Image (tube, rainbow, N blue to C red; front, side, top):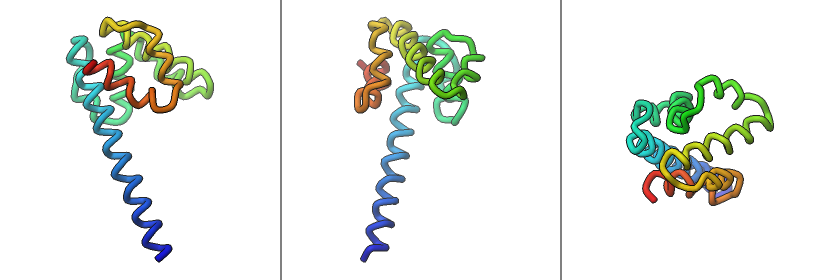
Amino acid sequence: MGGNAGFFGGFAFFVLSIAGYVYLALALSTLSKKTGRGTAWWAWIPILNVLLLLQVAGKPLWYIILLFIPVVNIIIMVIVWMATAESVNKPSWLGILVLVPIANIILPGYLAWG
């Protein structure tokens, strides 16, 4: 019985991970189309989706290097999401919500479809 519980728990985690990835890709693709920046299909490809987010935010692509530096990456992501919020005519302070659990899941969808 214990082996099955681990399998189903792992399977549930896998399904939730895929659902989260699809949600974020759809939101980022919509943001790209909404702002007219970047190539929307990049949202579906790892690493390119980060470059797309930087384009939507209007930030230079070399910011991706800063995302590999611990602690700095947190600050950069807040700055990028603040700029993304501004690019879709939302208040920039919404970018700070990327630090708040649950709100950081809702934020991309709100900016894309809200």
